[in-house]
Image (cartoon, rainbow, N blue to C red; front, side, top):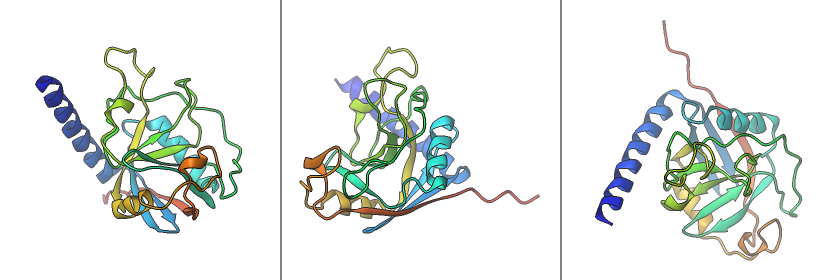
Length: 200
């Protein structure tokens, strides 16, 4: 048990170091919600296909006007394609799973939602409210066959994340009606900012 705990701590520390390094060099996304703005560093180095997919949806305006439709305190906030009436927007073809980098679903990380099929993620994503290690790839599994792909982490706005996690629930609309906020938390706009080019 002690060895497992130490291994988990070391993995989280390595993960946080990798994420911090990527934050300094990679693109960032600003998720402007009705309760405040959340800024995410996108980890193109560890999840290039997933980040490219997210940026495509963001630049198409896919997320604008949707809602955070699933709030599970102590677990996740989920969002992507549903409006306040529970209607889903059309999505592109699914993308392959990218979990071989061993980035952990730690608190504040952002990962892709999917069905039982590993290669089924489209536009739905979630923010981890806790260290959700059971969402990481299974030990000994073949690469990119298990777990949920982490593709970034919150760099500012965790106070907004926690505020959203505390809203009244059971709104009754969307794919998770029991976990839907009573008052919709609207994603007003998602913008992506590329890092400034280095000076010659």
